[in-house]
Length: 129
Image (cartoon, rainbow, N blue to C red; front, side):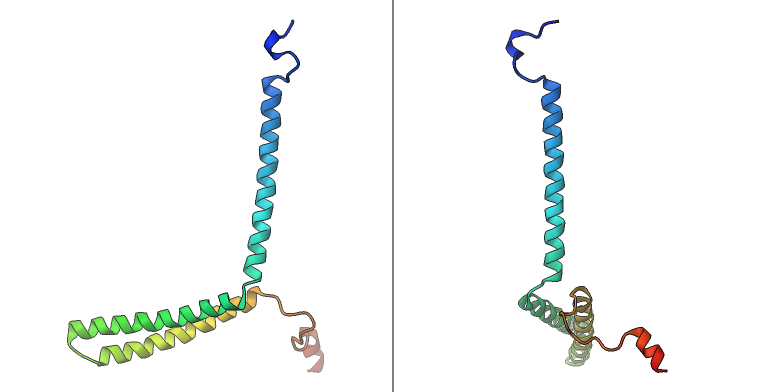
């Protein structure tokens, strides 16, 4: 059987489709690999400014939320300034706990610098006893 004259010398439509599909799949795999590599590098290498902004915003947000709720309680119940003062202190405590949580999380993600002294190994502690 002879191919129609307009497709002579060109690959068939099924071959072109298969080739295009394989190239698209390969491009998607490469893009996914690059995205994964970039996200791993970004999460481990947060700059000092980014860390400081996150810690500061966690602290300030907790204080502002506590103060705002205290102010609203004072408006509603007429207990001015006690609701504001008490919830300001509660917001301060919540901010301190948030900072501790965030710093612990950041330290767990970032590896220790090379050559740092991390203390005795667990098996060394058992030998000393």
